Image: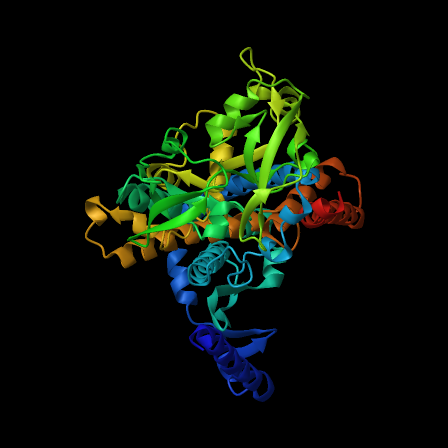
Length: 537
């Protein structure tokens, strides 16, 4: 019954909220105070607060300069996000259908997107909406346009504030003022995101220190020995069969038992030292489609016990054995699979395997790695790890969090490092919570903070960064009704006026509508293609 308690509380909270929502919608007792139901939301509109925005808008010259910078930011981000969408569209044929993003993954809504934690997600969303709308409001007043109302929007919890400019004034004012209003919203989200990322990495994560230096489990292969033995993300491995493991490379140096036999792994988990019996062996973590291992029937979780008559105990054994083979050579193999009825691993009915070509593979996926020292040998098309547990050092985790741009010396690496930083939630590295948080302690000036406060503030900063970045990047897309769509529409109107000087106003508007409509459809297609493309190809 205790496991159901959170769900019961959630149902009660939702029931109370929608009872209030229904009462407001039907009886309308608070309409004179500006409270009304709109869709599933409860909105409170008021004219209070306009004086506060007027005060913020007083340094008009500063805000006009800021708006100019905002338009530059929007242009750069719009070009980047469109290029990213087009690039991703060319890759969908390489994405297995089981790896394709689901619809909820495309929505940045806490509680719907499974990657976004509810509490930190709500904090990030509130900050994103407030700074976005207040930026619009400030530039509206700088442009001497009216604000009809300000308010708060709720969906069970407050989602943020909003400002409502006079739409007629906004659409009829000159193009420069209108573009200023549209640009500052997403640009402010981007700036807030960058500031929070700097605080999260350079202040909080840079002050964290490992409790121990032993390697940490950061991934578990599906159906692998580690998964069957209950090895979990965040476990810190200290011994394997009594041999000390200080760094991940120690797995390649210590004496390991034959594949299929048991090995004792000792670890720390949530600050407690424990041990487990795990089936030893090099397990397949990934098997690439249409390559040698896949074509032979090998699947994730299987263990390679021997290859070309050589026992395979670890990754070094596999690499050295493959280095002695030729492309397309047929070699002997022994592979083990987990059988639930046996409660353990046993050989599968596979005795030989036709290897692929390492050169042919890299020519297709990464030709830049081919150089004068590249040797073409037999190729399996797999990723593997001892017992299926991917390990890394605590220092490497901190480097990913505190110094994400380490080693970046060209634009390509910068983009790659940036995308990896954004992808921390997909790798289990954001938010940093127990058991991962138990591996580190705060030091330096932040060492006096309680551990709970340190991680709460740090995680909040990351998710304010993440949500603001997503809101900003989404809103600069050149598709109406997004801010970027209106900015693009104004830019197209200006261009059409210059190119079609002799056209009537009606014809110019028709050209603008056609161009903006085509681009909006293109943006929509590029996004939807990521959902359906991998499932069709």
